[in-house]
Every structure is written in structure tokens, then in C-alpha cells.
Image (cartoon, rainbow, N blue to C red):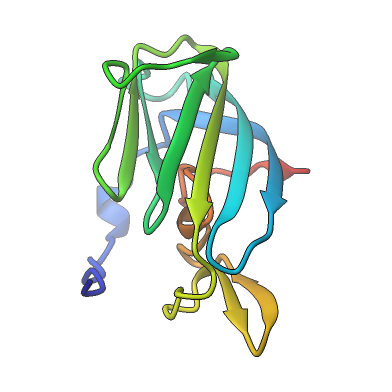
Length: 147
């Protein structure tokens, strides 16, 4: 699969994030070819944003294994993952979303996200590598507390 071409981002095109992520809890079950990642994001709508009915999370080169909103598993009519974006419709102003993914560190030759190097697990999350570990609004103005 070819790498996607990076698009230039201009300051004049900036829009505030629709949601803030106050905290994220991560759990990783390391495996060279099938690492399971569970994330729990505590989100709230940005009062300066225009549309906060849909949550859009970046998530690339990962297998989506489950999505829960407020602890309830969502069926595919409530969300869509197109290979790079996870879109969840009809979210409240404050909520918890849980996303389960499976990634392959051994075959990750982009050296972004979680990868294996000489038998060691390594991570590279800047500038946009975190989206290769789990689904997240992977932009520099969305700050969060990680546990």
C-alpha cells in the first residue's frame, strides 16, 4: 500500500477542534503481529466549534475491533471507518468513547506509531504517528492527560 501524500496545512485555514479530549486511558497487549490497543477518551464539545454532533478521529493502518459510546457498543449504523478516519454520529456534548484496535508492529515499516526495531517495541507519535496506534483527534491543539 502506498504512503499517502502529506498535504500542506496553512495557518489561514485553521479552525478550532470540535472536541477536547480531557483524558485518555490506554491499554496495550503487545504482540509482534497483533497488538491489541484499548483506549478510553473523555471528550467534551468545544464551545467555539460550529458542529459538535459528529466526532471525527484519525486512525490509520489499524484494524478497528470495537467502538463504545458511554459504555454501550455501537453498531455500524452509528459510525464509519474509512481506513483513515473514524466518524461517530450523534454524540452528546460530554461523553466517553472507547475504541479497540489491532495493529501490527512487525510490519510497520513507516516507523510511525508502534513498531518493532531489532526486537524492541518503539513508538514515534509526532507529528501524526499516534493515529497508527489508536483512533484520536491527532492534531497538535488537542492536548490530553494520558494514563
